[in-house]
Image 1 (cartoon, rainbow, N blue to C red):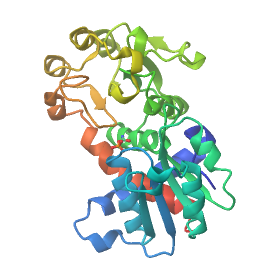
Image 2 (image 1 turned 90 degrees about the horizontal axis):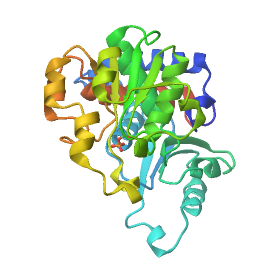
Image 3 (image 1 turned 30 degrees about the vertical axis):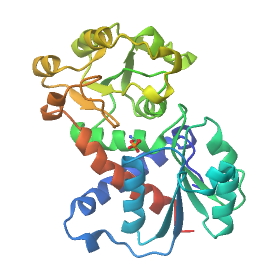
Length: 301
Ligand code: CP
């Protein structure tokens, strides 16, 4: 494996292998003895975050430390981008400093593809526009498989702002290939537009989805990408699509995923965090394990 641009660039066996590796690293991530997760190897990584992040950035940093890699964190603010340097030129600059593994978060669809043209460099997509967030879907699969034993046959419904979600697109690819029965639930202005979603069952509201599925993958309303939808009728949205406290009580057995960050009181209520099937915190732990697994599979450069 040279790059990780999206999950479709992984074969089924690659996905299985990464999930197996992540399973191996979970106890190390949970260990209170920090030295236990240091696997000394030589590697240099540049984390290139052109968009804000907490989970993805910190878990890649933690993965680098776990592997004994040296890393730098590049963030747009206070950089020469403020003086007009382009984002792509920034990557070439980091490459010229000797960094051959570039982990990139960027708001523009297609930017990761442009980065792959930098010679002799491994590119890892840490979330790109609305197109793909491969490590998120892999960590979701890892957390879900830990809870259920097998993703094949699970009835999973993706709920919320699918149109603006990179996570939904990567989940669709990974969960479908792992044999899940995938469906979706969103209002028209958040509905996906790509043809591959048309073959999937669409639930008209979350109550219908809760009747017929085992797992809900809840999505944040992507306020930063909404544009013309800023006049969203929030109370109406919550009535039809939110996992409210009352729904959480009535459906205590459902498994809940959410990539974070969560907008409490919008797509889910705080009470959801207490549901036995809520995997939201567990997903974060798997995020570290899957990123250690990925970087170790790519190998030090
Ligand atoms: N899920 C996710 O990508 O979160 P961050 O934006 O905090 O990295």
